[in-house]
Image (cartoon, rainbow, N blue to C red; front, side, top):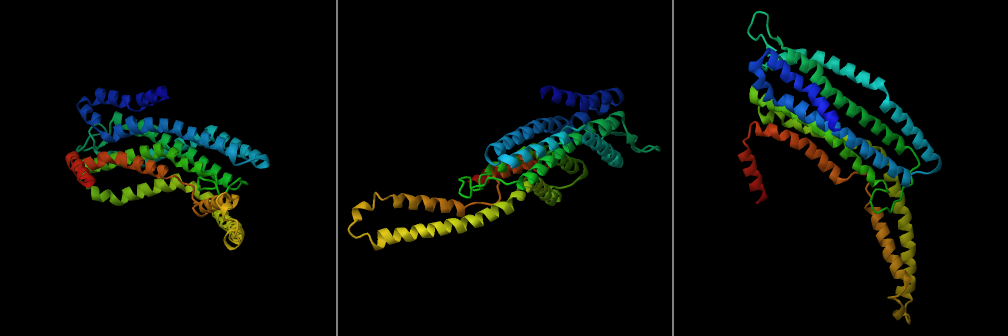
Length: 355
């Protein structure tokens, strides 16, 4: 992983420095201070590489738990078939070639956007009869550096799509769910940890978007309020992509909860009726046996089981996963905030809020 990160930085960022030194040495300082480039090549790209490792590790952990606890027999064999197909898709070169082609087409379609940035190391010829055009470093950034970043984003999203397909297929299998399971999700609460695997992707995307907003504030006179709705939309889209696959299990868990309430409600009614008959209406002469009666313990256990059924949540999501996603979006946006609001003001506001 370390070698991959070093290689990606060496290919994606170092040539920009060398080309700028060779062809526009006076613009080197502008390049080194360009947060849009640093955010993508020095922050987002390493995070995406590390994120793939974290995401696949999380997937393996969840799949192993599914094998151990949720499936058996024919359904377990079906799971292995599903996994084999998805692994073949993951390891196939064709989807990656398609992603590279799409990224290159996208880079070509935003050529004029590169020109409009007007940054000294990207564009030269401003105000000349021939008009502005990309520098060698600008061409390299558009065709190579951006391609590396966008390809890694697309690759991570492709793998997440495969994971989404897996969860959909899994939700169609005959899962061994238990309505009284203490995780309050029928025994599949561990699936709620999967959105954490999307957090590095969210962090990388938010870093790049936040850098673009920061550039607009510093160089184009934009204001933070301009990006309020886009920021909310970004957070919502990320949460939907990361958490949405868990919705596949909601119908099955909702049916399980309703069925459990009816079944355990009937059992509780029978037990309570017998208890009332034996120890309330006809306990005379046997009061000394009440405290040691096994019905006391079973009544308490049944009440606890019924409480678990009532508190069961059909949506298997952990609060920690939502927090991780929120932080993955909020932290990269901090430099954007600091572009308009001094850090002293931000810290003062935080301290006052804590009082």
